Figure 1: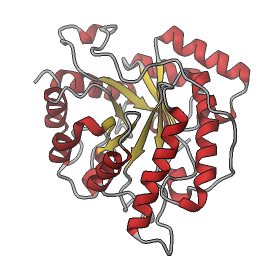
Figure 2: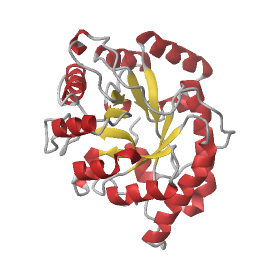
Figure 3: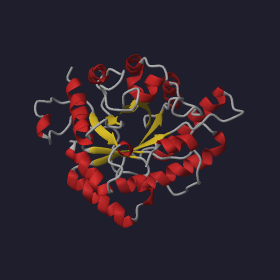
Length: 305
């Protein structure tokens, strides 16, 4: 499932269930287990590496996709709504598989409503409640939240304020449950109607929400297209970042194929002691397993400085 389809529509049926707690605690433990021979010689790093699954292995059955992730040396996967159609038996089967492979589901995405439209606030909150129940089955601790598109007739300030209020209301649903909500930026080339393309505004929203379980998903791919200045924004606001997405510009391929200097970014993340996930969200230009394996090791080694 391509999560970008969600961003262009951001409309859908209202879902409703009771919010429930999820087992994993906030944050990511320091270090990365050296389960792959290639990890030898890599010292402790503050962050772990994940894969946003929509970008790779889409033609394979789900269990085989997880096997490919493990083959590339990864132990964390981000989902984009794949589990929405799973039966109870499939939940049991896929959870068993990921446990066998030593994989966690670290983040989920796929909400159809955004925080920036006050007219769909109830539907937005109901969707989160439904997602929380699914996340409990997956033992997943983080949920990506969107601003939604520009609403005709609403001023930018009204939409900004709606993002703040929507996230505050959403934070009430996850209060004390070990869940992190992650607000993402999207560039206007990908979705010319999307509201929150500005990284500085995103950080301002997080600051105004002022809740430890609400953070920014800093997507460097979108941010580069939307104005760049990636490291400066990171240095000033690293404590507001809860997840990072990685892809190069142009083309959304692996680091090193475009204009973003990811080696310097990884070094800076290490210097700043960023201790949450860094997720690869790119389309490999050739053999996916080899490229993903290289990208993971490059990110870990660069963090050593």
